Image (tube, rainbow, N blue to C red; front, side):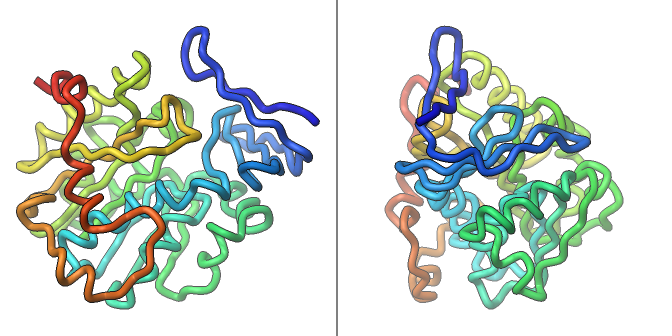
Length: 281
């Protein structure tokens, strides 16, 4: 038995025993590893950081996709930035009303390897004709996008280092704003409020987004294998408020079966602990 260990903060580490190291590869962008463990199933890491595992991936992918869809069920055109494991595309493709899903991932090998080792999340990528894959820099892609192209942009990024750094800049959020239609919604991976380094990046991202969008909120979810287990998404929109415009009945009428998200979770996720609210004051 061997152990994978990730440093969460100074003096704080998270470890998983694994049976097999399935794959190791250094791409032009990052180091990719896949492991097989008894508790978490197959999991993969980028530059030594946990990205996705079979046991809890549904939590992240439920919360990045179903929250905006329950606010505006009429979303037709979706852009995913990142999300190379395919889980976000899998969940958003469950809505038959969606017409196009453009997915932009800088590292093609991440997608190919997830299709091999993590079909749980990646299998839809070559099965749904609405999903169009683009292997390029997400910042450059959205920079070229025509104004008002998308109803929803999902920024399923890594942390703001390495390949994901450009997806936390003011320029990137400005281009997202322009690429969204009048009813547009932006959801972005918003880091964690708990450990200092993650908290700093969370506040930097939120400050940039609230400068641009008239509605900018933050919501939380419990991701056991991410640092502290307490993680956030940002919700920004030109029109829709995540609670006042929550279309509970319309979403429930779709009959989608989910493992984490539900209408009560939707409401509760936006009610943050006091220490988090204080950070935004």
